[in-house]
Length: 73
Image (cartoon, rainbow, N blue to C red; front, side, top):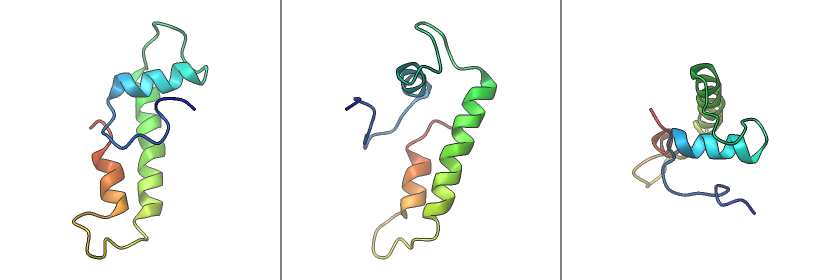
């Protein structure tokens, strides 16, 4: 299992680049273009939007808020 799967701490751009390299999207040493970063964040935002359907109940934040908080801004 990859180290970045099921992470519970916030991720930065470097972490996203590591994921892209591990999946063959980026070559070693290559960095994400602004467009690729925007796409990646859009996919994560869509995931958070899906989680919006679930209430926070007694928690301080919903799953969607947590997902958004874990990503680079």
